[in-house]
Length: 292
Image (cartoon, rainbow, N blue to C red):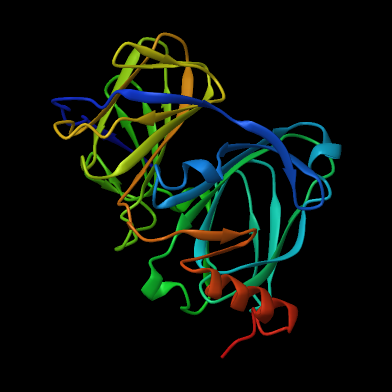
């Protein structure tokens, strides 16, 4: 159930440093998607490694799904806007991700999983975010949690802005998840025409906004649909303010940088080449994803 909230006043909003247009690609067994946060932005947007947006009403674009594949060294956060996706993994977990739900998975020392659509028609839409783990936690046991729509806290402002708080806290509303090392804020913001919205987060955190319906304005700069705006790290800024002249929907994500080396090879994200070689060997020899 949504709470009624009056957002705190942001004294100085961040500005848009750079606007990113996503890259059309495919993953899994040919699922068509847009890669919004690409590998060349990992250092700038530390601790975030990747953001994919999938959205199609053509089953040929998504029906093959993501068959068994490995991960090590980071977390995945899958937010389903529309559609249904079945998760199975090498630890014996199984869950169904549905409209408005989130799956938070810690790959840690290794997991092999599949994500397969459970529909043959209709819209499939959502986001998958990759969140890095600090070096000291990259080899922790794998873990995951399915968070159904009704367990994600929501609030509505006096201007009718609806906010879903997936992680962190926004305007004193705690989200469904917290992480001590990276302190992620992950919110979905739905703005009616003519509304504005503000939320605070630390000036030391890297942050971005991705618009997936309509357009928003941040400090006089317009961010169009399917565009990501990297927010400037202005020392005096205490948050961000978004405005909309048309109905709009966007996700805002921020987090505390780890400041550690990032070494990625496909589904493995570690700190050194040697750790990557070990991940590949463990996978090839059947040790990745094995409990113990």
